[in-house]
Image (tube, rainbow, N blue to C red; front, side):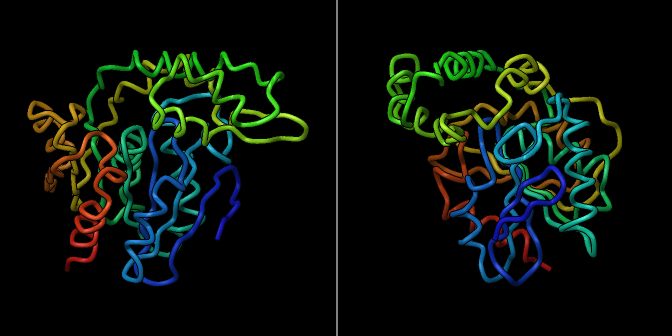
Length: 264
């Protein structure tokens, strides 16, 4: 079931159990967690969010983590967390939003899951510059199908999986096509997206920190900062997984979430 509450688009999966709210990464949408949400049924009810500047949600005009987290917090307060705190799961950029939200609005969050990201500045944003520039270079006025857009992206983005994932952001509108994310904003504010703000405070609730074995977004030297802000952190590493832990090892990811989120 899709829900349109002011400015934030979400989809609900499941009808029973505590509520788990999922926040995706850069270029993502809530539906990226559909398989995970189905795997959590019937114990948990999932709400899959399109973050601001992505999917069907509003464009904020900024990618600042405090602004985005506060906007999602307002939506939670009026919606999924109106009656009780929710569990919050965030991957990559969404993990940073989730951490900032938990630090600034702890009353809205029961347990927090941070998937393959750390509360530090991330390296390697240059690859995202290339991807954003490639998407922006597609001549949307000349294409009549998604396949034609893919042909324009085949040379700059030769990896089939990455190209197909990015093309999920292309939508038919009227007689043409448009990108759902605010590409210009995301390109302009990549340094902000790659960073992590000084928020202050401590989130003293249970936290599960999930890393991919082959990922370099969670490193041993990030541990002290993570545990300073989130002192009740339990760290788990999923074998044979890179950055996309929930899609590369979905069964292991679902199992880790179930154990953590349903424990007394």
